[in-house]
Image 1: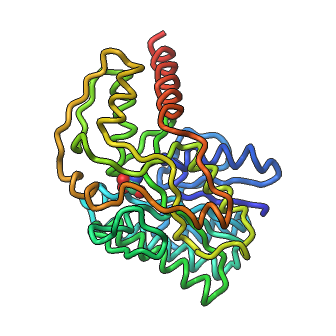
Image 2: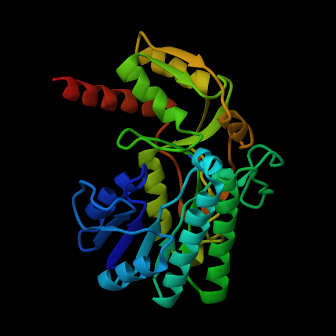
Length: 315
Ligand code: SER
């Protein structure tokens, strides 16, 4: 591995993955890319619209990229606002990455999938081969992504891998356009405003993971021996599973005045269509996955980090 390209680098995951990769692989060039022309970021950055194959190809060629972390995508709620764009970015963008990957014989492409591949017909605690019957455009694009990953692997021997990520909780970059965003928004609003109105019911339970565990999972999977892997982009990981009310209670224990309200909107039906826990036996046995953060450890770190940031901003 000499040069890594990260697409969607300005997003929730990318903004933490890029610095982690740069620290971990000192001799590897990590090129960040996203659609924004001129963001205020350190290190090599290139504006790339992943739906434009020529732009992607130019960067892969210029930097002699051998590994791609392809994060550029629209999430579930944004996808329901604009299904056409979600399809173009999530499927067209990935297709371009895979085609360029095939042409330039890239060593490895890491493509996150999502719990959104599951749907109302999926029983709880599904494994990788349990029925995927998504009812959102986002979920449909991720099923296609998983299938394309398996296809390019089989047909062209391209090394494509990925994880079905649950909601990710983090404090560096706020997520945007996802259904699980409430699990991040609640912390920001609790620390800054002392109150938060969830857009889902209090009994909504979804699988989640803390960012450092999610990054660790992506890197561990990327480094795994190909011969140890039985799946391409379909690995489930399981870390946390809590209701909105359980989350509020943990936040209240640390932010005395916190007031939570619940006013479900159209995102409730998306949340209701997803499983609340996942069977991650394959990730554990194939590449040694396990989460470090439990709910209390995560809530401690979220509240502490956001408080520090608020204090810095106000001083
Ligand atoms: N966080 C994503 C979403 O809510 C799920 O993968 O859309």
